[in-house]
Length: 352
Picture 1 (tube, rainbow, N blue to C red):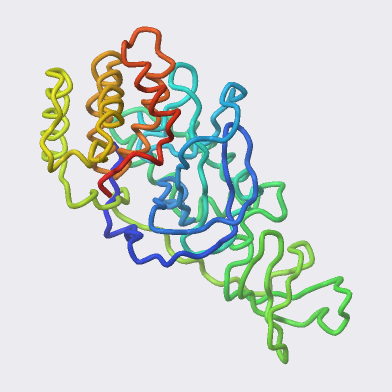
Picture 2 (cartoon, rainbow, N blue to C red; picture 1 turned 135 degrees about the horizontal axis):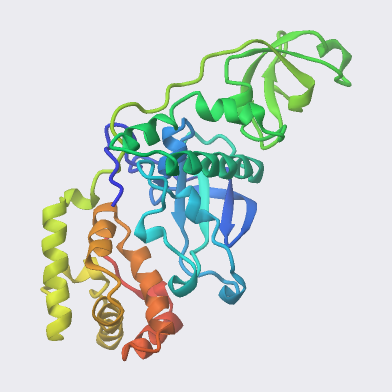
């Protein structure tokens, strides 16, 4: 659905695995966690266009009681920047079941905290309301324009939170003066903003070898450095998985749907794309049954599968659909879905 052009957001294949401060979002709960940032993370469109290089990774399973989930707050953040609404693959709640747990962290390794989340959620909500009020043919262009810098920075500075998005309040390279510090010799001395923690600004003072972590309310900006520019031009997009284009993905999905209808496995060279390349034939048959339940009985949509293939999210989509089939009262394949869930999604052999 939403395609990202790799010219504007680099692919993540050159990431080395490391830990960064981020959050875990599940239902309506947001928890500060340390996130292992790896190549499986993907850009979140709206904040990226607004100047914050936020990445997400949907986690398999929940480890919690899904029945308690009443509000999937991650959905709004995953909105399509052109229209203000979440695409089909991020529609959860009701018959669609709960959204999976999602990790969020920043590509630049700066902290992303629950305070940042609160501000971002408010910003996206205000932006979506503005988009909904736009009429006429210029809606898409106007929607994107409403995200451009310094919209988010201005919003952050009007927000009641004092510790959210410290890098937008005190950009790196800015000159600041501290007041009210217990270390008296630093009060009134000009220093340079060099880094951040979740709730402190790292300031490097003259004659000091290491930055000093200072609460933001004790800092005053003397000179503000310019923020790095957010991506311009078309809506950013991740390159299609494996170089697959839309025409190829559509043809592959149509052929797969035909195989499901005829109750025959697809060719060997595409088995892994649909999680059917494992050595356990009984397990493969159960997975095949889940696909039949999703596409033939529940009619969850070939288009959604095409978009998932283009964005490399087939595994995530299958897990979501499998849960829906398992809970279905109309699909004769619900038993297969329950088998797959019981065995665990990690047992599926995907072609990555």
